[in-house]
Amino acid sequence: MFPTFSPCGDSAILVTFGSTIDLATNRRAHTLARLLQARPTGPAKNSGIREAVAGYTTLLVHYDPLVLDYAQALEWVQERAEEARQAGVAEDPAALGGNDILPAPRRVEVPVIYGGEGGPDLEFVARHNGLTPEEVVRRHSARDYPVYLIGFTPGFPYLAGLDERIAAPRLSSPRQVAPAGSVGIAGQQTGIYPVDSPGGWRLIGWTPLKLFDPQRLPASLLAPGDVVRFLKKENG
Amino acid sequence: MIPLEPAGSSTPLERAGSSTLQLLVHEPGFLTTVQDLGREGCERFGVPVSGVMDRLALMVANALVGNPPGAAGLEFSLLGPVLEAAPAGRTSGSGNGCLVAAAGRGFRLEIGGRAIPLWMAAWARSGEVIALRAAGSGWGCLAVGGGIDVPPVMGSRSTYLRGGFGGLEGRTLQAGDVLEIGTAAGRYELAGRELLDELRPAYSDHPLIDVVLGPQAEAFTEAGLAALLSGEYTLTPACDRMGFRLSGPQIGHQKEADILSEGIPLGAVQVPGDGQPIVLMADRQTTGGYTKIAVVASASLPLLVQCPPGGGSVHFRAVSVGEAQAKWRRALWTRSSIG
Image (cartoon, rainbow over all chains, first blue to last red; front, side, top):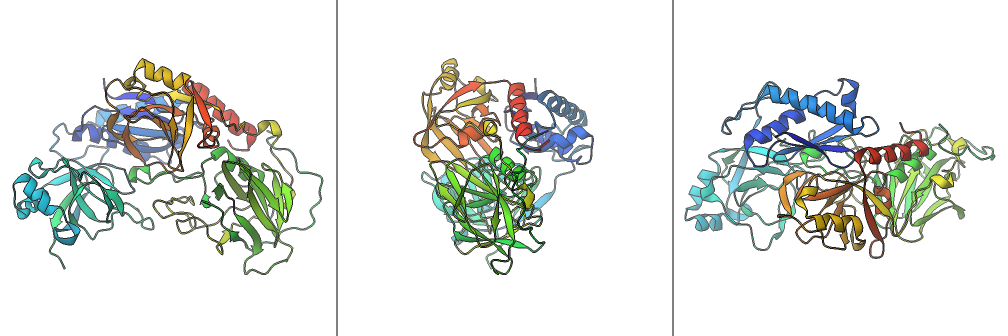
């Protein structure tokens, strides 16, 4: 029965909420994360909680073993998990509303210049799916994408829920550099490269938004639980 | 608590003023970076923790010079830096200086040509050369009384080289760099304090490493688990601040080597489809999709970190979470004033 709790070394507990990628499961992880993060001045036990990192269906809770032993940390996390369970979560994956603990998702609009220099693979994605490039763009910018987690590189959002009509395989050999701001498709995922990095995703456009800036507060434009909407922007 | 030997009998010849002090970098060494205990609290934004590789070494070095455990110091590997303490403005020979302590493995410390043991606080007068000389493989660190004062980024002074931020402009040191030292640099009376011999880490080329099994131990075959806990795993040359690739008996999976991406703790032993383990270190990415058969215990991490790539090897032993935590608490409480 979910959630399950298991030790992950001597300083972390892995909480698992399910085994498949779906929004309700992911939101349960975010709800617990919020409960663990929101109380910096709470009871002494909470001071032993260092950080909570969401995966697709999990939350990795780091604690300080000099403050809490495993049993104490486990008890604390389980109590918060019970609070989170009682708060509930929308069972309908299409419903993006929050619950008593998790605020309604922040909606972040990401302007994209599709195709051209910043989107060299737009034509490929269109051909691969028997669509026109315009139709790929229309479909890509027609829905909201929840941020399931951030990982891989600083600020890199894992977005799910791509229209399957515009899905495309990865490059057989990754590019040396996918420039910062590149918007790509890999299988049924879409994402944005926050910093220049090697990458195998099909690049269909580019955004001038800075997804990650270490000197900015917060450094990451997006947070787990946000919702991204791509807006078609004309070049220039 | 008597963590450290008391200061020697030498009387203070001089006392530091309150003037700001700098470290001039004459030779940068190899892979020399500013590191503290890491950047906590930003992993959910995909920001790696970074921080010093041998956490115990930095904590002890900091304790020796009177710093809090997480003060920023320098970390180096293969080739150490050559530095000089100088009052701000580069005027030399004013009689000021700073307290330093080197710790870790693979280096010797010289101050003004005098050999100073590792794990000991020593006074470096302004104008004296502080040299970290290579003496084998390993990671060394240098703590300075007052700490290295670079601007914190996201709450930490640690350098994250791949991301190009933290530390000194997000990069390794270069000749000609000037590092600011925090105030309270001049506690001369701590010079001569050292960590008792029997408390120094038992670094070895073939250490026994404690691991806590899981969280995906059940993804492996019984033979795979037995291989991990009985085989010898050598450190390949592919060992860096991000992770150590080991090579040894194949660790087989029940079915798949992949899981849905999830958070990765320091010391995670992940096993991709080829059955060869990778232990994730300070600059690891925050999330990953390989099965983790075990996680290295905090108290064993310094031993693994200081095991030489390309020649060293380890054996793994399973311990309970409770045992691992007790060992780590003991390690810290007996060696420093932490806790």
